[in-house]
Length: 300
Image (cartoon, rainbow, N blue to C red):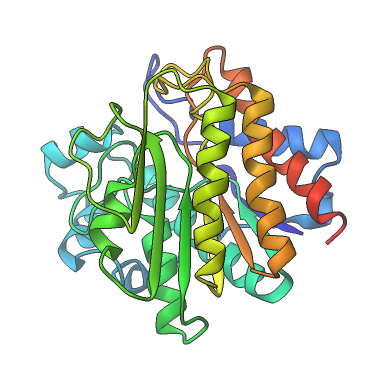
């Protein structure tokens, strides 16, 4: 089981910035400390070439991110200051996502300890998302002739508006988004299936929704599932508005993993969001995803 990571995922941010950027290294270190992921299973994410990112994004937008001419309003919507480190990080996250998907097609399962940047649109970023790694991966897999049908199961608490804007309407892509009805983004772009979950929804109701909709995805018989495993449905999440317990999140992940494994569908995991206070809760939730993954897939 290979997991892709790079220290450039931890972006230097101004003091007091609200994004929990340290979670990436903490999750990586936690997985290693617990022995959930063995040393030889961590692989270094490498940045991709701009032309690959341009499979899903407008060339002028990609070029503006590279040379720093991107508009002030776009950077404000993204929520990070433009820096050379941000450029490297953004291309490396996409590199890790592509490597994870290719490995999943080869061995059955893999993960990227970042990504799930589902708010990035074709010609702009927003919501802490510069490039949409999910959309780039889909376009890359098609361009390489590696797949004919791809499903994205997006269980982050925020709707994947950017992914839907780039990939929506395609017959060869199934987009499932289960998200908070009243949460960001306020203008949601239609996926294949969108489930608007009411505020304060708890484990039982949420898990019933996931089980119902996941069965439809599996029945569609995708060649690979990209799983956006955001942990922000957690009750303690400051941007979540749902009321899942840590155990509920574990059962959510288990349903996805068992469904994929039982049907032999390759699975690539993107980290997604998490904004709990204290940040240790978010870190533990992300680690738990891989703990459950190991329970389901064993030494694979």
